[in-house]
Picture 1 (tube, rainbow, N blue to C red):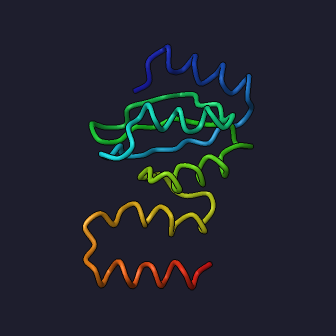
Picture 2: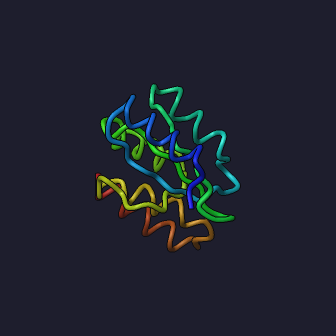
Picture 3: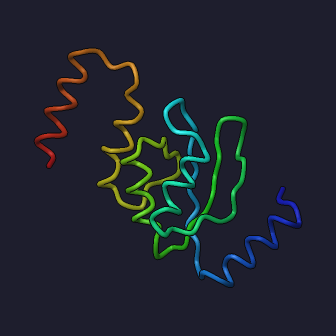
Length: 118
């Protein structure tokens, strides 16, 4: 259940920026939550409604007009996005971040697949 502060934060963010798109992600060893927000804010994307979904999953929202660009940046940076993707073309970037212990053959097949998909 959301606290009163979270409800007011969401209301004021929507009043200021219009519709928002929520993202959820799992922090991993390579990308910390603070770095995720820095990645987006350095590129002019406003991050609002920060929430802890569970012990292993965090969430935030961005203005809808910036959501597709934010999704691309997140996937490209290796952030494990767990929310539904806006653009299906980002799935190969998001899936690539989840292959952490791939063997040589898996990496070779993945590289060929990435090369032919371009």
